[in-house]
Length: 224
Image (cartoon, rainbow, N blue to C red; front, top):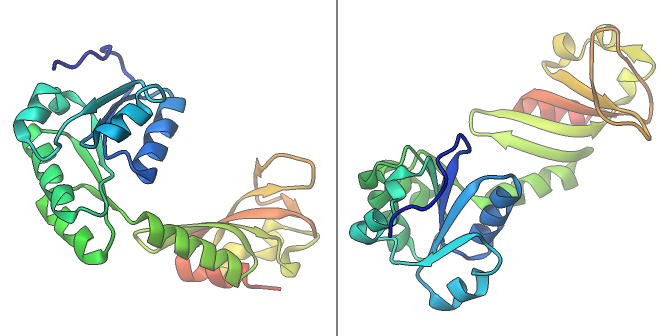
């Protein structure tokens, strides 16, 4: 089966595995205007999503020849959303590497699974359950309203403005010099987030977008 997608500048993505994670990724990419080919071995899932997703095919993703016939090597990126079948997950990543896919994202269910995926060629390993659990824990444990942590000990959080910033400009409160974080944006009640400047004043009911080293962001958001 030759690839039938248009040859334009929009990145093309192949999503392998149509469980909850894979279908969420595929649907979101399509909404964002990406070209997506979904591959699934289970015929029932292929039938279930055939009318929802633009391109869905039934194939064994561990089969090098099947992927070659689908033209997978022509895609810019691949997402391996297989979680429970670790062997199939690893073999699929290997097949994608051999097909020449430039950027491979793979879901892992354990840290050991993730290390294996990295060793066989995955460029990015995703831990959906762990990442979401950690995000929720940070929100529940502190004054954060939202939280994202990156792999290099860098985090971004949305938080209510701590008391020490009220009715002061950012230059006066000195978040960067005193706490090692950068306040990126501020949101006032009834308004959108706006990027800040040193002269931007923060008020009691404001929300802040804060970035910096993970420890520093956590400590800043915990301030009362």
